[in-house]
Every structure is written in C-alpha cells, then in structure tokens.
Image: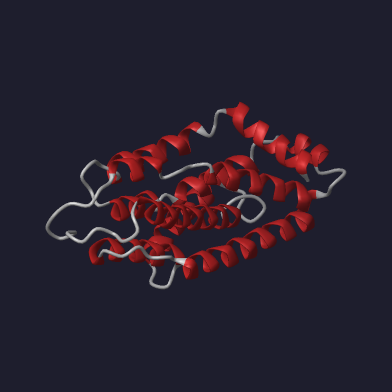
Length: 220
C-alpha cells in the first residue's frame, strides 16, 4: 500500500494537473483572508474550499491510462489501487495550511471587540480542524463523482460543483456546521472546537471511499 501511495503521489506531482485546484484554493485565500479581518472568519472562509479537494480526487483517479491502471492493480487488486489514488488526493488536499489566515487575520473593533480566548494557538487548531473537515468532505465528494461511479466528465464535473455547494449550504452538513461554528465564535469571542463536524466528515469520507473501492472491484 505504501508503494502504491508513493506511486500515486509521484503521478500527481509530475502531471502538473494539481495546478488548477491549487490556483482555485489560492483564489479562496486571496478573497477570504485579508488583513484586518477577524481571524476565525478568515479561517472559516478558507476552509470552504472542499471543491478543490474533490478536484484533486478526480485528478488522481484519472491520472493513469486504462492499461497502466490494469497493471498497477494486477497485484494488490483494483480496490486497493483505487484506495491509494483517493488517499493521495486526500494527502495533497490536507497539505494545505491556513497559515496566511493565522498571520494576516486579527480581531477588529466594533462587531468583534472581544478577542477570541486563548490566543493564536487555539484559533490555529480550530482552523486546522476546519481544514481537515474540508479535505475529508472534498475527498468523499470526489470519490462519489468520479470513476467508477460517474465516468462521463459532462456529468461528473457539474455533480461535483453542485455537491460542493450543497455541502456548504445544507443545514446539518459538517461543512456548514464548521463554518457556522467558526463565524459564531468570531462574533462571540470564543474559540469553537468543531469535533462533531469532524466526526461527521470522517464518517462521510469512510462511507464514500468504501463505496467507490467496492464498485471498483466489481467493475474493474
């Protein structure tokens, strides 16, 4: 499994197809993380880029030509080979850090007079949890909107974009929950710990990845 994971990460790095989702994430940061903005609000906005993680999953799942995919899956099996691709996408998405948000964001007067308790470290930890939720949900979304579930890009890409929007606006979604917690914490001057959202994101990612890998074994 380790060899498969290194193989998939090397394919992703050499393909340079990761540039587009990285640019998308940079745009999120440029718009949502600005000097003078409350740091928890900035972290919440930066964590909303689940579509970038889903895009990375689609890239990793389609990086290999069919013949190469057959060769790489011949020994470990198609399910484990597909799992390695999904894990590589998750690790690439997880590599992003809200460092700029922690560096640039600070509390401003007026609406956000009360500074978030505990200083920058708890705020950074809350932001890391939010980013992890975003990466997990993006991985789940990508696993459900690419091969072997959806083969046509004409169907998969709109489904991926609509799914990312659905995750952010649906009440009860872990993504919507973590964004609400962070922005509410910024208003109230407390640092939230969105562990419930993290647990929901982990469950969603495990279910989606298991489904995709199981279908990969059946459909080859």
